[in-house]
Image 1 (spheres, rainbow, N blue to C red):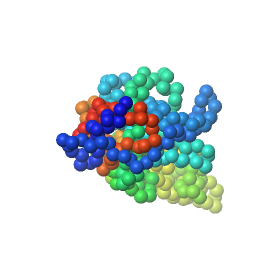
Image 2 (image 1 turned 45 degrees about the vertical axis):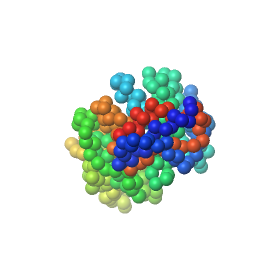
Image 3 (image 1 turned 90 degrees about the vertical axis):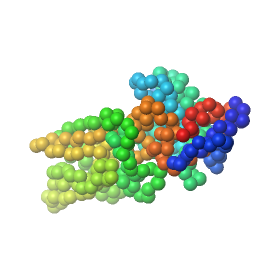
Length: 348
């Protein structure tokens, strides 16, 4: 692929517009690693391997986006979006597990990485094409790789990172209604759990680094919600594990509460923190919408937008307002994005 193929690219920002003179893709100012060190399970054994970056991107994209069915063109464009996100996430989180001797894990703590899908998935060829189409392209903000967070389903409204985890906000990770897509795109769910099982699931869960939960759960209430309606703070009233401890009330972050229950019941139990709680006797019923933390790109909404005719650029602009698409350096020349694909990706 000749480098002259780069001449059709325009920058994607929240205020992108059509230009008669489309400049070459801007340099990201970062050198992309040729390999990433990944821990994953291979034939039942946990291993650490140096994986070529673009192979890693393909495997994570097809692991994170693998619909059972769908229009080929829609899924193909979704894979283009996801490969850019996966590459950006890898670059911005490189060395996340450095103390453990590798860069990234293969779970939702980082990104799902299931390399066997490269041989078994019906979308393997499409994911390979998507990697070729977007090779080396990353999302940038303020001259740094963006924190390209994503999740399966926002339930109709995204949240800021500070609302979910605390800390400082990223201006491009916004809380906004997922307008422009049918409400049915966002799944509803319900989960019932007994008082005894709920107490066991929360036993030892930590409110913070030094405070584990103890005692039998007596009541659970949502103390506060964020702008999206997610449970930001949850009040847990407990009867003490010892007579001396007595009754106590603890406030826990909504996402930490969900993670504790996911460890006990699996990720499809309490699918998000956009829920209501009802108690009937010794049973708690959680009723909610969405799947995942709700920050960044909503895959369910993105697929619906692409199906309705939006371009990958439209999707990126909607979920990451203000980001710029740029070309990282360090890949082989033949990994240069193709002219036709970049026009599709970046046209307004």
